[in-house]
Length: 139
Image (cartoon, rainbow, N blue to C red):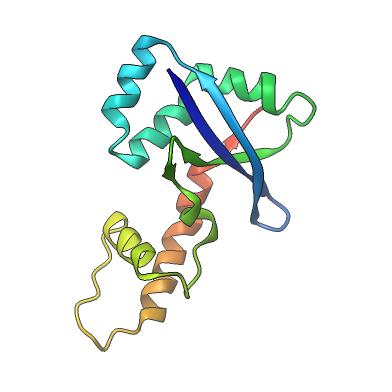
């Protein structure tokens, strides 16, 4: 089985993510394919599994980071499961992103008086920590 994935690069000085604009493909064995099938419906479990997998780290060092081991990356897509909203969320992002993060971070907006901007700011606070967990450092 093949896993297709995309990346974003992280600029630590600017605390900013940029699209990598490359599509990558890695071959996985039957056992890894079974794990993928179990985790594909739970996006954060899927992300963490791939990020921590030895086969993925070896591929990244060998194929992506040969000359630039000091770069930091994060996964933006795994076989169509997108994580891009983690890196580019803004207070003006769409409703689906708000709903996703409210559920992920257990944020309750209990009444209509609560401004969308307040919820967006709370999401950004949670994301400032979560983004750091998503970064893959190769060294």
